[in-house]
Length: 277
Image (cartoon, rainbow, N blue to C red; front, side):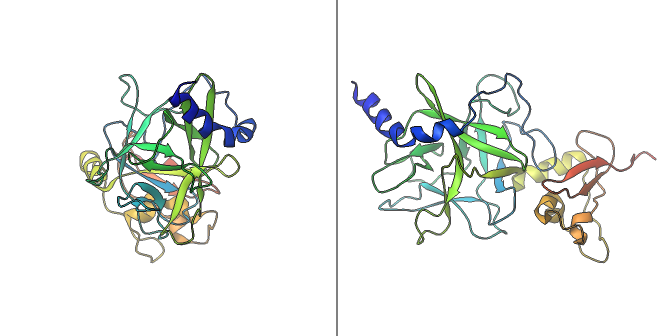
């Protein structure tokens, strides 16, 4: 058996028991992945990956173990931290990111000590579960990520490029208590529900092109654009005025204004009025 095959087999064996819990019947129907404003994710834009339940913050790179380079992806503990922007690399010429499509995820900015900013799955003897990081020191299986829709938003999967379709959901794990955040690890039992938000600089360009105005006050509270674009973080608490917030803006996909109304699991964007009236 070739060395590469041996390495792949040794990586797969500890996780074969999990595969029976993972639905691998991918639908032939693909749909555009949407951001928190219900706009399709475009491959030439940058995004933040954020928790759908708004517990803790975005994603960052950190030094872990014996590494002198920040190669491990952690979820920051602060809800105010949006994270490091990422981009998607998809096959073909489609300008949009679609569900079920094999793709690469890459940080827009990588440390100088890292060989690549692309995400990969890593495993070594010191760690119980394979974890997500960027190009560095340890052998990783050859594979791609996929995005699957969930009730709360979306979920990431990692699929190995082998003879059989071997995939794992990506979850969160407090692998080591002394690390400043939670690792992204394989987890078919408790997958990590996420949403996507346009990164700051890209967001400014979109707002400029589409005439989006500042938010208004609601019930005496000062509303910020951040409150609106993350309206889903309020959960089902309809007593919170921020969950009933409205924004006077021009829709990117429609001529009208969007009213942000929180749902139990994710907010809905509805046409409020025609700006031409």
